[in-house]
Image (cartoon, rainbow, N blue to C red; front, side, top):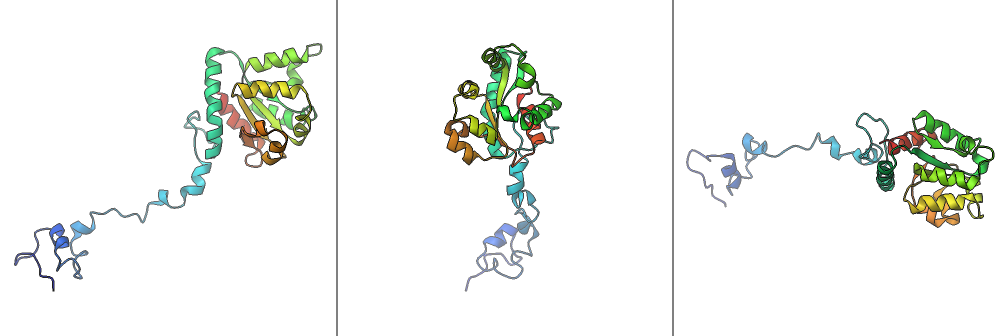
Length: 231
């Protein structure tokens, strides 16, 4: 049987009692020494470690988002948009007076989803190059597109079923997308389709993850683009 190592009057401290082979397991061994029991933190109220896994992915903030912003991002969105933001900062520093975004879209979407996105972006304070308003009568299309691309911080590609039909064909979209991909200034916005469908048509474009209206509304996407291009 283990013998107590304490003097007649007992242990001089809680730590000494805890180290005693005879006293450490007595009924009063741990609970009787308040100093010992309180020396370890309690995790019963540590809610930040419990159920925050799912919500934290939707409440993350990128470095360019203001502290007062209510816009939330997923971690994958931040990861895909960070290099775009870096390119935006470089472009804006070199050309401070350029427009915020160039909107690439299928011709069939010009009066519907593309116009909706354009209007929401403008409402959010984004200056957008949009063919419906910026491609005037008699202006050579390719020259106007070149100018729009050069003088925009970022390119937005509205990926819809109509765009998926247009991409395999040799068209204006080829020139637009090539320029945007080369400059790392491309943000695909998938609408009414999927990345899998895009990957079947354009693996290169699908490799650039962006935003998706199945995750965020068009208005929320416009707010994210507004934060992305704000300098």
